Length: 101
Image 1 (spheres, one colour):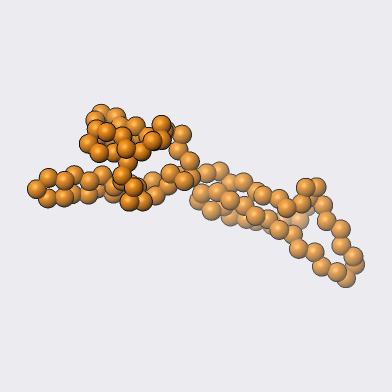
Image 2 (cartoon, one colour):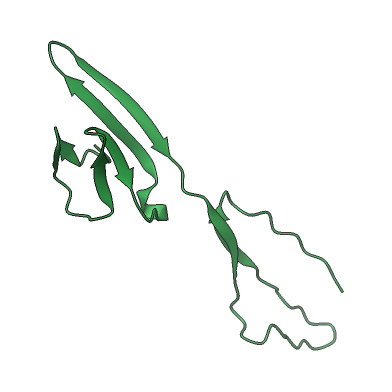
């Protein structure tokens, strides 16, 4: 179960995503993991009493810098101001450092 969505029922795959499969009867395998696969997955055993085991999946992604200026060059008038933006994504969140060459 992920995000309260049932993925499997016993040995039957409920989710219609071919990346998800069962191995060794009850092990959940996710192939080609993407950031949207991150989250908590719950293995639940229901018999006389219910038992849950929670697995938290974190998907690591390398840092990527997203530039809003194609050339990376700005021109400013003397006495004016300029704003340099640096938007970066990744997991864990990247640390952005500025330097002047």
